[in-house]
Structure formats: C-alpha cells, structure tokens
Image (cartoon, rainbow, N blue to C red; front, side, top):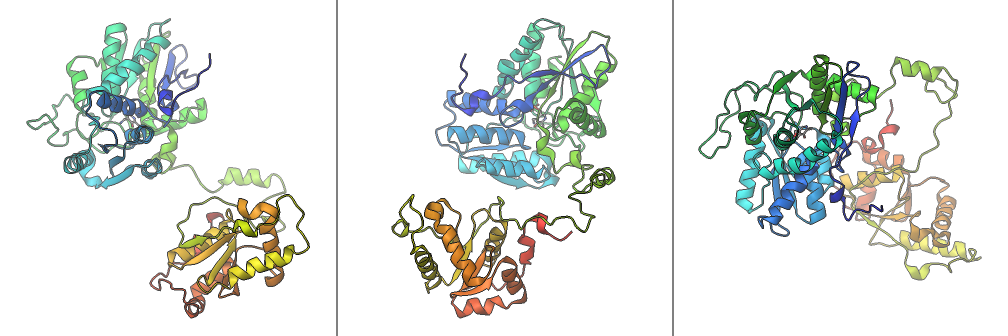
Length: 521
Ligand code: PMP
C-alpha cells in the first residue's frame, strides 16, 4: 500500500522495538524501544503533537498564537517542529547548562530560546515561562502537569508496546521519568491490558526524588514550592528534575511502580557507549541510564524473561556533554600507527602532497555586502560560442564594476569558497561596506560569463586564485593580503581615501576567521 505522509507530523510514533543481542545475560529477552526514530529524534515529539492538538481541539490555542514552554531541549525541539508545521511562533525557556546543540537546533527550527541561570535549576526555567506567558498572553503547554502529555503515551506508545508484544508476555517494562508523561500514560494502559507486566522506574542513584517517598513540597495551587530535598544535580538530561512532577507523583500514589532502580551517572554513560559500539544503537544519556537499569533487572531475572526498556532520544544531541568526553578530535596512538602503516597521505612525511588550494566550503556568514548579479541585458546569446568580442565584453563588465565611485570596495569571489567567505566575515566584523561579485553563480555561468571575467582578472592581476579584492579600482590582493593589511593597519587608510568606512574599534584577528582546517597546528 502506498504510504505517503501528508506532513512530517504523521511520521511521529510507531517507533521500532529492537532486540539487545550482546549486552544482557544470555537467556533473557531484552528489548529496547528506540524513540530516536521520531522525526526530531526523541520521545518528546509525541508529547509535542499531543499537547498542541489537544489545545487546538479545546479551542485553548488560537491560530498564530505564540507558544511558550520550559524545556531541557527535547520537548522544545519537538514543539519547534510541530509549531513550524502548524504556524505557531515558539519561545523556549531553558537553563543555560543544557547542551549547546539543543539551543542551536531550536533556533534552527525557528524558535527563540530564553536562557535562565543554571543556579535556579529546572524551577527557574518553569517560572520564567510562566512569567512570559502571563505578560504576553502566550499559550503554555505545561508539559509537567498537562494530562494530554500522559494521554498521548496512553494512545500511542502504550498501544504500540502491546501490539509488539502481543505474542509473548512482557514481564518488565523499564523507564525513567522527566515529566512523567511516558510513565503515566504507558503504566496506566499496561496495568489495564497487561496486568502481569511489572513496571520499573529508573532514577539517578544520587537523586532518587520519587523513590525516596519524601513528599514534594507544594504551594496552595499544587505547584512545587521548593526543590525536592533528595534532588542533586546529575548527568541524565531530561530525567528527574529538581521537583516531583504531578504526573509522576500520581503514578506512584496509584501503586503503579513495582520497583525503583537507581542508576549511576557512570553506568549511564558506559551503557550509552556500549549500545553504540556493541549494538550499533546510538542514543543519549537517559537512554544509557534506562538500559543500565534494564540490564540490572535482566541480571536478576530468570531465563526466558521478556524485558522492554525505553530509549528516549538520539545521541547526536550530546556531542558537547560528558557522553563524548573521551571521544578525541585528533588521531590517537592507534590511529597514528594505522596512518603510518602505509606510505601515502601522512602528516609526518615531508613529501606528502599538499592539499590543493581549496575553494569550496559551506559556512553561513553575516556580511556587510551587496551581492552583485549581472544584468540580463549584458548576457551573451545563450548556447552560442563566446564570440570574438567576448573578452572586450568581459573587460567592459569588469571595468564597470571597478570604476563605480559609489562602490569602491569590490570582492571578486566564488559563492562557495571558504577564503572568500573569510574575507566577507572580516569585512562584516569591521562593518566595511563592499560589493561581492561571485563568478560561479548560475547567472554568471550563463555563456561562461564568470569564467571570462575571471580570465580578465587573471591577465590583469597575474593571479589564478579568488578572491581578488579591489579598492578604488586598485588590486590589493587576495584573502591573506587583505588580512595582513587589516592586521598591520595598512589597508584602513586606503579604504578611508576612497570613502569606505570601517569600525576602528574592532581589533579581532582576521586569521581566526579562516576555516578551522587551515589554522596552523
Ligand atoms: N529522556 C530524555 C532525554 C528526555 O528529554 C525526557 C523528557 N523530558 C525523558 C527522558 C523523560 O520523558 P518523560 O517526560 O515522558 O518522563
């Protein structure tokens, strides 16, 4: 049957359950539900769609209304996807100590991120979201209390589990909790429809807020009034906030937790790495922690026991966290030995061929540039050979660009050249207005117009390479010439003579703007 999706949103859920083959004791059937298969890579995509659709249905969320939420990242990333697709602006409040890639992902998806001080912990970001919602009339999903959070897991996650284990008894279901949405929704359905499945809840071993049995202090409205006394900072992002969420508390009160399993941060990191290196399953820290808890249960289970654990997200979100602490950037001794085992392409052999001067790369840049496109009138007849007067035409075009007193600073470059990008970044940094003529754009490719102009430049300057920078019609050199000129201060007077202004307060080293692979080792 053809399966075309109407939008990204219908790809959420129906994540695979995969057997863990090597990490567990033999004889025990250990499985993991891989929530990284959701479109934005985490279990929170389910919640995002669930709460938004619920609010739409109840008429609580108006078309175009801003959504604001406190989130350690995955909820925000899921919400950002749903909001982008449904046309709601999104503001996310997040403690500054969560990983950088989460912030950048959110912004990439069009959300705005308001950071809160790490010292104020999870409660700080929640308080900030509430303040913003009140002040600006924004809609707040309130993932920690919203019943739609549990509901979406009862409707989707739980039913998927029942379906995938319809032919065997699921003995243990192992999870952690953040908001408690997964725990609340799935445990409710499992109790009803698979009553012999025991429910195991993992917590950081140094921060067992729910397992401690100590009641969460709450204000008159039921909101947490202080951090839970058992809370301590831990590395499992997305797990156990500094308070017991209502959703998790209700599960504990309802007697739906059969066992608490404390997991150490070290075990969480180790299991995430072992899942990657031994099973090829790439997940985050809380997933490593849940797997550690499931493995502990597996070790005390009889052969034939069926265990399922929830792996909430992808590991890609943790590149700047302790999960990747031991993962090097440079070659280690073993890799160096491998490199030396054959003669070519080595760093330690003088005759190694130098990489060709690079021209292509992709990097975003803010510029103070006007990018020039050729006027259609000047284009040669498409399809024809460059006629005899082609050079005259290209000469005239170059001359026109170099003799415009309104645009004295001209960068001839290539749209995808890293050196060209670096020059533009240096000019942008100093607020130096310039025009950019990218000779490889589609417009300049027609009739090889860019190639012919490049040939004109080559004859005039004696240089093969781009960028070529001109001030008042005078050739001042390429990327490093300009950088040297900016560094020594010799370029600035020339710019001033031609009326090009610059921000003299900027003293940043332009060489730092070169692509990283070009930096001296
Ligand atoms: N792990 C990660 C990485 C998460 O982002 C979350 C959600 N905060 C969880 C686990 C816990 O899920 P839930 O909120 O449904 O309890």
